[in-house]
Image (cartoon, rainbow, N blue to C red; front, top):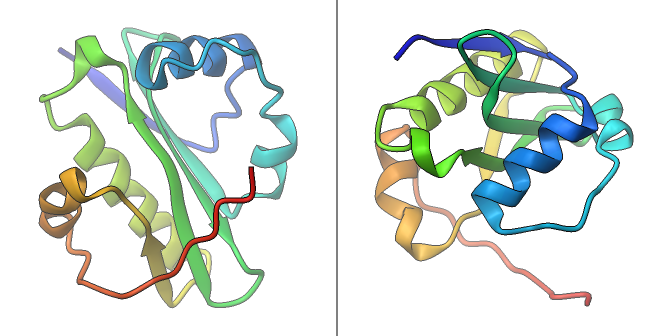
Length: 130
């Protein structure tokens, strides 16, 4: 499997929505253009040309803190190192663009994955707004 990792590919909404439906079970179409245009950067993984099979967004505070969000890989392409490559590319890009800290929040079942990517433990808080 040849996977190409692209920086700031600005995927079409159709591509993002198809990936979201497969990876998250989210069938409600969204417009991603506003999110991507305000991000510090984003990384896409492509299988065989323009087929988007993975994605991670790098949000930021406009200063030294960056946050990876929405890390996902199409279920048919998982367990091949794609997510690790996405996170490592996001780390590199955030560093190159001036971030000093890279944050990630995740569910407990993903702890081993993010630890293997180099993230240490931290305490955080969360409020559900809807």
